[in-house]
Each structure stands twice: as C-alpha cells, then as structure tokens.
Length: 613
Image 1 (cartoon, rainbow, N blue to C red):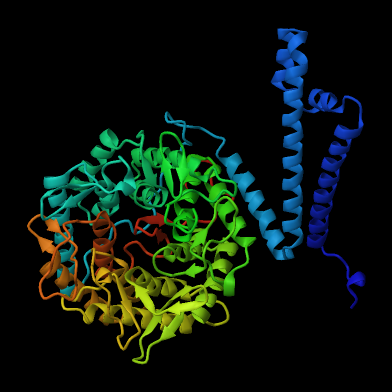
Image 2 (cartoon, helix red, strand yellow):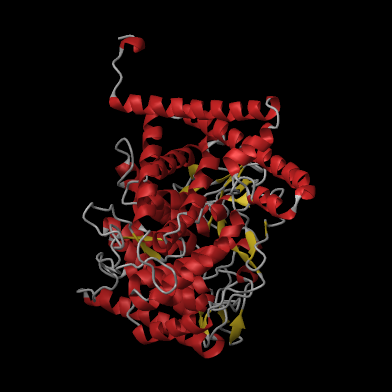
C-alpha cells in the first residue's frame, strides 16, 4: 500500500504533532529575531513585555542617567539568550527528526516519568531538606551459612581474612585512606585529594554483608563524626564516585542509616561542577572547594576518559532517587546524548573524548583500562532500571557485537582473549582489568538478542578460562597486571612493568558470576586456589600486600593494602562461597567497586509518593 494512503495511527498523530510543535517553536524564535532587527525599539519592547528583568526595575529607582547603559547590557544578554535558545531548538529538532518513531516514543515516555518523579518528590522533607523516605531493605542483604561443610568452612576462612585485613587497618592506619601493611602505617593516594577514610567507606558494605556488625557500627560512627568533604583539594571524580559515593549508597540501602544517604548526596552535589564543560562531558579531576575541573595532562590532548565519564550512571541515578534532585540523572543521561551523536569507528567507542569539542581523541579502544566499566554500566543501567532502560540495553548489546567482531580473538593454543585496538591495529594484550568481562558477558547473556544467550555464556566461560590460565602460568599463582598473546607466548606477561599483582578482584569477580549462572564447581575451586595464593604470598604481619613480580620465586611486596581488596576481592570471594539468595541478582546490581545497589523497581500506581520502591 502506498505510504500516502496508510491510515495514521494514534501514535503517528502524536509524533506528527511533536514535529509540528518543534517547527512552530523554531518559527517563533525566528520571528523574535525579526522583531529585534526590524521593529523600532524592539529590544526594549521585548525586554519589557517578555522578561521584566530586575535590571529594568532597578533603572526606575536609580534615575534616567543609568537607564540607557543598563538597557544596552540587558538587550545584549536577551539577544544572546534568544540566539542560544534558537540554536538549541534547531539542534533538538534535527536530532528528533533523525530518530526512529520507537525512539521518539521512548523519549516521550521518559519525559513523562521524569515529570511524574519530580511531582512525587514535592512532598515532606526531613531536617536535612531531603525527601522523607520510608526505608525498605531489599531482599538478601545478609545470607545464611551454606549447608555443605566444605563450602561453609571456606566461607568462614574468607571472613577471617576480612577480619585480619580490617583489624590491621584499624590498628595501624585508622582514618587514613589505605594501609601500608609492611611498614605498618597509613597510606594516602592523590586520587582522593585530602578526603580521608577510603578504606572505611569502601569496606562498609562488606562488613555488613559478612555480619561484622560491631565493626560496621565503629565505621558508621567514624563516617558520622569525621568524614569531611569540605576540602580545598583536587580529586578523581571517577574514583571518588565509585568508592565513596558508591560505598555510602550501598551502606544506606543495606542498613537504612540516614547518615549514609546524607553524606552520599552531599558528596554528589560537590561533584556536579565537574559537568560544567561545553558538552557536559565531565572533567576527570575536580577541586571540591573551587569547583574548577581539568583532565589528566597525559590523556590525548586534554580528553576525558571513557571509563571515567561512563562510570557515573548507576550512582547518579540513585542520587536523584534519594535526593529528589533530577540534576544527577540529567547529567548522566546527557552523556549518552553526546555519544549518540558521534560516529563510532567500526561500532567501537574510543577511550578518549574531548569535553570541549565533543569529538573523539586518538582512536584507542580497550575493554580493559580506560574503557572497561563504561560497557559494564550500559548493561547494569538496564538491569538496575528493572529492564526498562531500553536505550542502555541497545547500547550495550550493540557495543558487545562490535567488540566480538573487532577485538575478541582466539590464540593458537585455543585461549579466547580480548585484544586492544589502536588506530585500526590490534595489540594482542589482555589486562587483568579486562578479566571482569567474563562476568559481564555472563550477566547479560540472558537478555541477549536473537538467541545469543548460549553463545554469550560460552564466550564468558572461555574468557574465565583464559584469565585462570594467566594465574596458573605464574610462579606465585597470582595473575599479572597484563598478559600477551604474541612472540610465542600465551597468557604470560613479557614486560617487567606488567608482572605485578595489586590484590585486584576482576578474575574472582568473573568466577563469582560464572558460579552463580552455571554452578560448575571448577569456579569455586579456582577461587580457592586464589585464596591459598593470597594467604601464602600476600599476607604479612600487618595486613595484605600486593607483589611486584608474580613470576619471581619469592614475593617482593609493594607495601599497599588497597581499599578495593576489602571492597571487592574479599566480597566477591565471600559471595562465591555463599548461596545464591545472598544479594540475589534480580534485586541487586554491583557498581564497578562491588558496592551493591538495589534494582529500582517499576512503581505500581498504588505506591505512596514518598515510599522507596
């Protein structure tokens, strides 16, 4: 049937009306320009009729001498605002006309939900001027002991490891960001500026999950009395978000203690100035007092980094939910708008994006460092939305398809790995950080399009095996920072600066996901191998330390107990030996620092405006 003869549906009428409204609005702005340039005294007329600016009102009080000067300044501001609004309207109209009808329909629905949410939060507020929320703890915050005696014993051992790591931190570094377990003193990274207590905030949820309630209460008291964000210091927006904001949000959802919600929102508000760039792509570094941001000087001509600006979504959606302030969600949704306008080389996302021009930097693509958690957060945004964020879902599966086509390779020895892409050339290297991808692919396999579930589970299992091999082929049975598949070697680090192990969690994270989805006992066996190596080579008198060379016959310790060892590595090990109903995946999503955040359930009509879903 010819298109002109098709009867329009109600949906198409709505879309047509939207186009007409956009065109009418654009015409109205153009008419305003005509009025400014062709009508006598039109700018004064506009300022008097439309804007009633305070400057004009001031003129009537200060006398006629100042009227003309102030009016000129006011006119220029009005002209600039009209031009900006006009340009914005044209860009939005152009973007809308390029979208498919189903995408426009989804946007309309999102706008409706946003207005509905804003109206819901215009209710009672507490002493901190935050919405009054009826706290409801999501299911599975704590678990029960496994029935199998061996699993129970191994789980108890991991809790003992957590207690030793925590007690060592308390004894030698309390209040510092991290612990130096060999020299038995505090350690501070410049990633956190002069904010203190990274290990305390990072460990809060692990303490709660392992039912170490006395320690949790001690940590809560420290947060209440000592955690201070009023510092004149530059911080990493990414690191502070995933460790501090994520840790505080998770502690709130697990315990219901209001201090964590208050502190998370306070810190979130201090991070908002990072988005003050021409594109809204945030700076990597931010001075929390001045609000001045900048990027890492080494990052491709002042670019922002994909894994940093792309790893804010989960936390910021929850900040909007808990604060009633839609700005947090708007900032991260705008990042998607910027990315959607850009061409992707072979469907891939380069690691560098200039926040001023909105254009890609050098074409370096990695699912490891600089790229990793961007892809993770696309999938988890969809899952955390109770599978309503269709845009996030599509972005994830499209990206995964491009990764499979361009980056996933198999070695001559049969090991599947994810290479890096630099300007069209593959570097056959895989980082320890990339090993999270096995768990990510398994987590997303159930929702995969076109009956790809089985294929993606096979991919996840192959990546898990490769990462296990990177551990098994070392002397200390701990994985190197990066390993290669060239020059006759497979899954082995060949450069000295890639041979270190800093207590990273990504391989164990993948074991945990693979166990949950398959219950194949080898994943628990592999996890236990890692426990034995950690105990033998990383445990020292004052805690746990990384090692500088996993191929050496004896460990050379780096003297740092990373905060993520307590937040991630030990938590994922504990969950690997726990039952599936402990932090079940249909109710919880882990941020990239392993802080569990609840799925934001669809809101039934019967829910009260102030009730936490």
